[in-house]
Image (cartoon, rainbow, N blue to C red; front, top):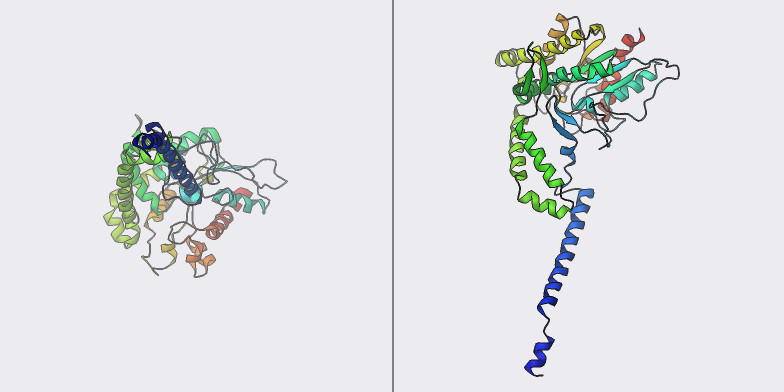
Length: 375
């Protein structure tokens, strides 16, 4: 075979380029498929940002749930109120009192049937007591946010009763996360809790990444954008928060009150402002109740970890008593219901009540509400 014949058998540049293009497309398609499958079956790379896109920054409530489509069994209206497709009511119901529930992730709950308001409504229905629940709980909401939230929701819902769940995390949220972002009007009233610039920057980066239709392009954009740096910074801050969030609760009561005197004063002022805001609407304060769910550390007596004090809810009680507002501390009732095994009623390595614990807590709260509603 002569040189001329050998040259003729060599692939042309166009053929070589075509081969590499095809191989790149095959490899790229394979990576795209793998990225989409891992998103379904357990993601090493979170490319849908599900936990982030459920909420948006807000100039009034810091962060708000996205209205519309249901995510993880949760659906909200444009006002941030959970939507329930089916609510069990007694057949005798002609008029159902409206109950507005405020709180954080404990109140927000999980899927439709695993939320405190839903379970309470179902429990009361068995007693032939009719209620229409409005669940406005959302992760990390606290008294500082409840104030402007009530200013939005009260004129729309016009609730007959209001139930507000307050716990240890609310003290930290008020003083560390939200205090600096509160906006007050000329009368000094809390009218908004704005989002921080860091949160807005993260969400802007998330929007830019999700604008890419291909997952492989999202992965590339993540590597070359500010997203990873912002998330790593936020994660470090959150790690520090988690270490300090229960600091007050782990001290003896006198030391806690002395060390956090100013912070407790601010926290109590937010509780008072909730009541003052309702007075502006001539709401019957006899139909307001502050409730409290204990953490495992309140019930375990120090077994396997610190024993929490009751300083935070004592502060709530102090303000409530000064205004003749009802309170319900579920701690003693849940101690009895949990029968010395409180760990069985909480998710493992999580501060939240599990579904069994939610049932017990809801039953305890229902028992307190029934006499009020029966009137």
